[in-house]
Amino acid sequence: MIGYLRLELARTVRDVRYLVLAIGAPVGFYLLFAAVFGGQTNGAPDTFGLPASVEIMVAMATFGAMWAALSSTAPRLARDREGGWLTFLSTTPLQPLWVLAARIAAGLLVALPAIVAVGITGVLAHGVQLSAGQWAAGLVLLWVGTLPFIALGIAIGSLTSSTVAYALSTGFYFAFAALGGLWVPPGILSPTLRDVAMTLPSYNQAALGWEVASGGRPTADNVVVLAAWTTGLALLALAAQRHPRRRATEPAAVEVDANETISLGGLSKRFGEVMAVEKVDLQVSRGSTVALLGPNGAGKTTTIALLLGILEPSSGSARLFGSTPNSATRSGQVGVMLQDNQLMSGVRVGELIRFFRSLYRGPVDQSTLLGMAGIGDLLRRRTDLLSGGQAQRVRFALAAIGNPQLLVLDEPTAAMDVRARQTFWAGLHADTSRGATVLFSTHYLQEADHHADRVVVMRSGRIVADGTPEEVKAAGGAGRVVRFQVLDRATDRFDRLPGVTSVERNGRTVTLHTGDADATVWGLFPLRDAVSHLEVGEGDLEAAFLSLTAPADRP
Image (cartoon, rainbow, N blue to C red; front, side, top):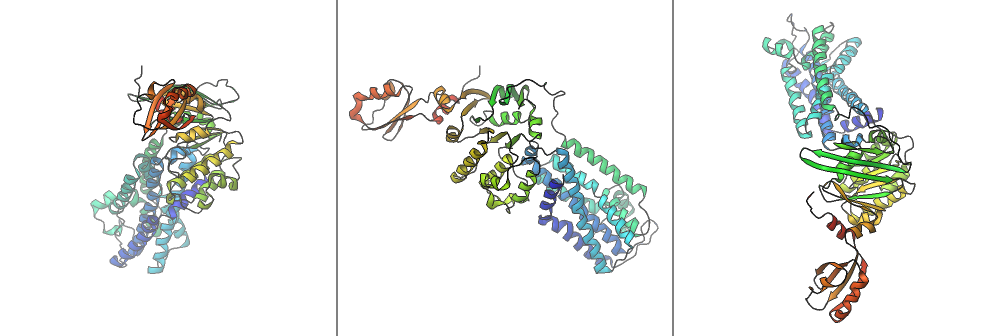
């Protein structure tokens, strides 16, 4: 938890909005309001009998602590959730409760500077004098009093988008300040406004400080109101944070081949009326490199989510190393690179690498990892300032960092340029040389052809081909190609040649896809005066892919 807490604190203190709204704004408002109310003393029996400078100091310390708590939770949690960062964390040994505890602790810790900054300003600007005990008690009570706002921030971040979360946080920030009576000394509040204020956590948090500063003790009413808000908002936050319900019982342990890494049996997933994955059976042996191919919507990403335990199947089962996906990922046996998931924002790459290395018992040596992923020059770069290709390389480093026995990579080279893709595949081959199993999806068919020893093709949620690249090419009718240039425009004669399955023409160049290249070449012999630059080569995976994934009605 401590390591993740450091990341949360690092990205908060680098946020200019935190510095402005949690520290700068409360200090500025304190100076402004103290000047307006000019040292008045509010001595009415139902108020705290303090100089206005002291009352406003406590109110503005509360004001800053509120923003620190809200801004360190709501928008960041929402961004992490909608960007896929929390989903990625669920595939690592990091426990969700650790992440939640780190957020709560971060919310408390970042509130301290706001409280202290306003207190120091009060002393320097207006000579506010309190005993050491009053300063200490006030600091602790105002600090603990931020818990309702942390719970509110977590609830907002769990239920809304990052844009909405920031807007709601700002709205609650100013609403609680205005309605909670933080912008005027409490003695000036009208009876109606004070009745409203006394029901809000902002007023009761400040009241803890006012009571201590006036020499009294916090009242039971203040504590009860804060406890009620904290409890209610915490329950809302926990309800919003709950994970999709798991099966009542985990699938029974089964005997599996010791050489088997992935076992999917009858795996299906339905979203409403759409069957995204249907009766997928797949077994992958240790040390294999398997490419999962298919057009958009074929079910590749859903299948990967099912085998990782991110989604619960509608029927069927998924086993990794003979155990449940959750057990395998929590034990560090699996390294995952999800499609388009964003990295934790506001932290440096080096900080992220150090933290994730600490999660595993036997992580990859850091210098080896940096060279393998090609990120040695990115360690001091903030994650939110990386290009798409650079971010992909960092994601690969996080997937490989724990020396996993299985790497699951969803579109790993998306957004990478040619050189970055070459670096990636060189790094992956270096990692798999130790015997790791790799399952990757890609739209770059040449990558599958060159780097996979097995290709699985999906269409409409089903597996339609499974074998070596050569076997899949044959299944798709790719066969071999005979390519030549023609000396006239007539091409209709070529589709009648022996073995030809299809004809392509690009200008004067004709490409014949054939199941029997020898027969096709002999068939061209009578036409030798009409052709030139004859070549015979292997059929490509693209032709087989297009054939295998052509739209077809399900039975």
